[in-house]
Amino acid sequence: MNNGSDIGSHLLDLMLRGGSSWVLYLLLGLSLVAVTIMLDRIWFYVQERPPRERLAAAVAELGKSGAAAALAKLTDARSMEAAVARACLSHAGDGVAAVEERKAGAIEQERARYERRLAFLGTLGNNAPFVGLFGTVLGIIRAFHDLAGNSLQGTQAVMAGIAEALVATGVGLLVALPAVAAYNIFTRQVERATSASEVLAHEILALLKAAPAHAADAAAEKA
Image (cartoon, rainbow, N blue to C red; front, side):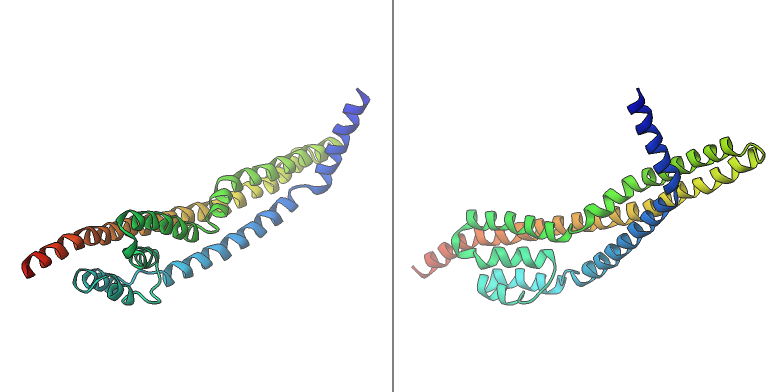
């Protein structure tokens, strides 16, 4: 029994010494990391805007001149769509089944690149309010402990301590809301890029499947 009470008293002493101020510093540090990730992802997605004219020109070139000419149109082009198109076109000679596998692998690889660091924003958005609530609980514990040690100030001491402790909950919500909003926006960006890449890859596969039929018709005409 004494061991349990000793552990409880040590934990209480640790909470009273720390208070809720360290939670505020923790939330401030997490918010700075979140802002850094947001700026990094915004710049990344701006740079990865799909070159739609070049993509359309590559698809048109594939139907006219073949995969090599279409691939030349996408040299150094950025975006998930361009990377997936290059993966398909560069292995066009391996057969349609191989191109489909290359397409699936390229989309997964690009999706992982697009989703980099987004897990931190999602985790922070879900858990920052709980971190702030933990700081509030620590502040309330300290406030009631101060009340027990100084009954003269009474209600004023408790109210001042609780008001200070509630700041942690407010800061936790303030950190969580932008993180959740940014996570949702970036996730939709990833989904749009993935969907557009799937559509483009299907267009390329359709043209590759149609190419042997066109070749057979041309041979028949010559004969």
